[in-house]
Length: 250
Image (tube, rainbow, N blue to C red):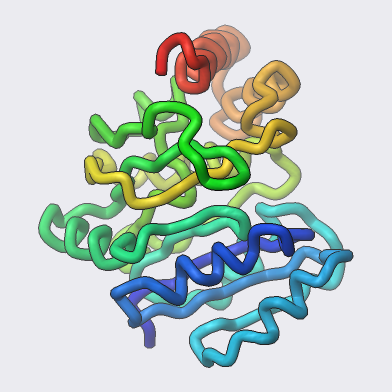
């Protein structure tokens, strides 16, 4: 069994997919499996993946388009590694990402860990200051802002179990991390920039104003908080989101 399972959803990702593949193939740590679920792409993403001759890469093609959370869940059900980590089909890891994260988790006895990541444009040129892994994450502080990014985080499934994504929510990653952090005291920060995140102008995560309701539902439906609590945490999330992406504060 591989030590690490890499989980990737893919949907019409051909523009950046080869760079993402290269970033995985160039990892100095090699004991991994890469579980890619294609979410019914209409471009040539599947053809690009099928060209790779590596038994560690396991491609599944979804029966129907169900969104990124659904695609990740398909892969998670097949994961056999102790450590679970995520990489979207347009993001990028530095060659030492897996090696550094595993060494850090073993040294710190961490159940969840996360690193810095660079915030880049489509050409992977940094646009803002690197997002800093500067504090431990807990259930309480993650309610106010999602400091855990999928591409720069890892968790120990042997210790905390596999956690699936709620399907149908545009904030499925936040809900997943909150559910994981209910089980442990905290996640540990690795203050090194180990990944590059593409900030697309039309990405869901950048259009905060369009997903206030979805974020409210994170608290009201998924965490089952009261209306007042849910409004309080949604307001905190909105303010922190502005500070996170505003060039004034970066």
